[in-house]
Image (cartoon, rainbow, N blue to C red; front, side):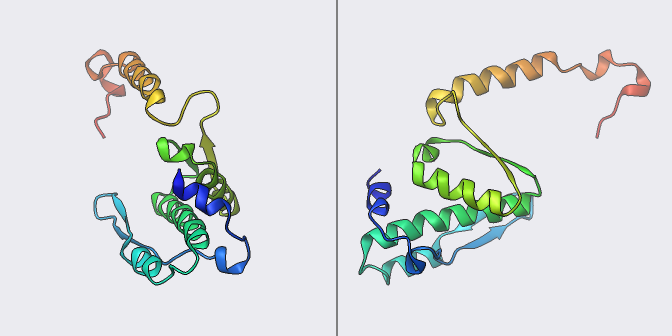
Length: 145
């Protein structure tokens, strides 16, 4: 919250509108990781204006989310978790996802943080409960892919 508050007082000109460098690594098993090393190094050398640095940090995370979405190859991207209670992060991420042609979805009636976990558990359980068991399907409909 302190970082979001600090970013709110930053100017929105070109110097605050460029993300810090960030790397995406991994992908061997479908799992990618945002490597924050370059971001942290840039942050440490950009301490003259904490508000601008906080805004650029938020923008860097939004850009990283878009890059992960590109690599996942999914058109629809769900923004969930406590970090999306941060209005600035949510807005920057939505803007970047829309600009890149993605279809972002986010919480409207349920909280994005732990308060929404129970509903996700109910939905997952309902899906398992209603999924037909392989043994109950006729042999020509059984696929084990």
